[in-house]
Length: 485
Image (cartoon, rainbow, N blue to C red; front, side, top):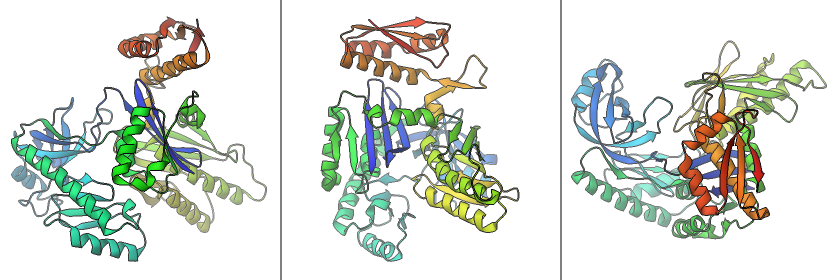
């Protein structure tokens, strides 16, 4: 069974995707944070870098955004990929102070600002409208050639003149009527954007993409998802209204969770989140994988651990590698690891076994909605992969650099603690008559949370439970003790 579980809290909304009760994706939208992926802005060019074939653009965010020349559409440059013509070409297209319409294609990560494109795309339920292109693209995940040909012919009949259309995976098996509704909606949306940009002064937001729950309903919720469970009634009602408009046949699959038990604990998600933050992941057989990351590179090491097999060494190694391939693919999705990935499988002697392991890894990676490519196996037996970066890794969202060890380790972030405190307060309401809770934590952890004291006060105001933060030097930074009064 495939499920989407949404935990709407006071400080953040968390959305989990489960496949047969296994957590495979987790998205978090924090109160007050800006979700900018997919947003369209009128930006101003603040610096052109001919040597890098790129430019910095101000769209009104904290940091200027990065625009590669290959992400710029302009008839003045016929071949922007050639290094010899690149610097000359970018100088013709972009000028200091120039105002251009851009879209966020990657959120800020670490010290890097957001990445932009001028090739605007507007996603609908089944189609994506590309106003500045003219072709027809079809999702790679629609593999049947007859279906691909059928979709292409149908889209050619309704495609707007001088615009491009990308057919999404959800379009498989749908009819022309569904596509016409999508096209009408997307054309109206583009007309609003086009009208607004003509009177806009940079930097300015032109179009804001859907919020986390609405975007999930539009992009992911389909007949293969058996349940969409939400613990907040207002969010549930909005979801019902949206699904009634775009896919009414799925309306009964959206459910309102009313149990007093925390929704993430009910579906065993909380435990799986903690597991996903571990450096070492144990496999069912007794083997394990170790995941280490830098800003641009992630290395995954496979080990036999406690598994010793019962036939030969080659067979033991092969079974561990096959099992780890599935776990690695799942961890890449769950942790949202992007960039260059190197996997050090245990060395195998048989060429057939090497092929089968790569095949197993490729099969599992096909479940990933983010573009992932297996580059191949090096002479040293290392498997190289690349996975598109669109946002921060899960670890960077739930943890931060430890101030006690100069960044060599990581500890839970303020937002993680605030969520834990909120859960403890709700347990207090549901299971006791207590009117206050005493939260004992490491002094540094208390100090960091007090920087977000307004959110603590908001939890108090909305629940009626008084929260007292108490410093305790004997506790580990990640530890939290609760005393109810």
